Length: 172
Image (cartoon, rainbow, N blue to C red):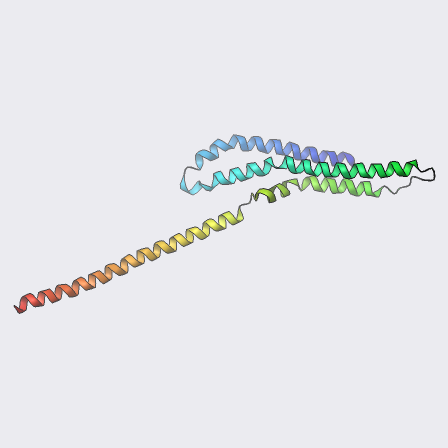
């Protein structure tokens, strides 16, 4: 189980390195694509993904430090117990198994925790963008409708004014 514990940490570090290399290669391409209006958000998404993956190492290091401290305390407790001449070692090392299982699950949760830190999903960002676009369309529609209403009113006033002028000219 200890081998799986260390393998989980190695897997996370290897995946992090691979994904960062791929993101670094794609970065200039994303920057070039982001020039077009419809793809402007791709640069922001790329930055958030890059930072999220980059944060895997610090989050993993914090988890490693925490697990190492817990393991040291467990070993110190076992050393104290072994110094007692009346201590009989038994199969009560279940807590080591639980400890390593927690460590394995913790290492595989590192990407999720890093995602929470940077919010790489950008759910509220796209929601806010959609709200802004809808508001802009509504405002543009109101502006266009207002122009049409004023044009209609102007035409009606001009029509009435023209008839009055025509009637006055005929009456003289």
